[in-house]
Image (cartoon, rainbow, N blue to C red; front, side):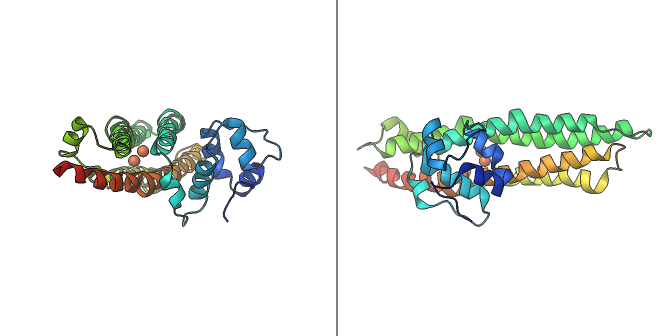
Amino acid sequence: MLFTKTSKLAEIVHQNYLLIPIISRFGIKFGFGDKNVEQVCKQYQIHTDFFIEIINTFNDKEYTPSKKLRELPLNITVNYLLKSHKYFNQVKLPIIENLIHQLKWENADNKNNKLILDKFFNEYRNEVIEHTSNEEKEVYPFILEIEKNFHKTRADEQFLNVLSKKSIRKYADTHDELNSALLDLKNIIIKYLPPADNNEITNQILQEIFGLEKDMEDHTKLEDSVVVPAAVMMEKELRKQLDK
Ligand SMILES: [Fe+2]
Ligand SMILES: [Fe+2]
């Protein structure tokens, strides 16, 4: 199902509760009554088309963000991506870490199990931190520079110089390491660790991990199918100025 500007926000939450963290990432708080998307976006000064695109992208696996999203200024999407990074690193990963610390095994292997799990969790977290901070320090600023220069009659000499040495294309497939570290973490819990005494915590950990995975997949979809293609197109145009 496709949501539109006139969809009631409360209905959207009833339809798919997995959208709750996405909605709150925009700063929207509950208690929105019968307001529709357009009214809520106006209240919170959110770009309505952007909000709808994000909600539809996250709601439907098959949905490919429309051309409209690719035509919006990239800093709107980049700002949203930055908020998601903050949410992954400062909210979700600490929740999972905290749950892992609560796991208990009565027998002597207890300590060892915790060490194994900590090791896999830390590997995954380090991958996420490394990936997101590289995007924040290198990739996103480069993308915004590309966009800024694209709108100038003639790109800055300094920027053209940078462009002769690097390209945004290189960035397109750096998401694989993240997936493999996550698969290891899931499997160690699902398949290999002996059952913990407080198994309900194990369930919660897995729910959190799968939830984070879904959130990250959609995040990556935005990077790979909206931001990068737009930047690649602009970079291609800018490269024409390199020979002049
Ligand atoms: Fe990212
Ligand atoms: Fe990424």
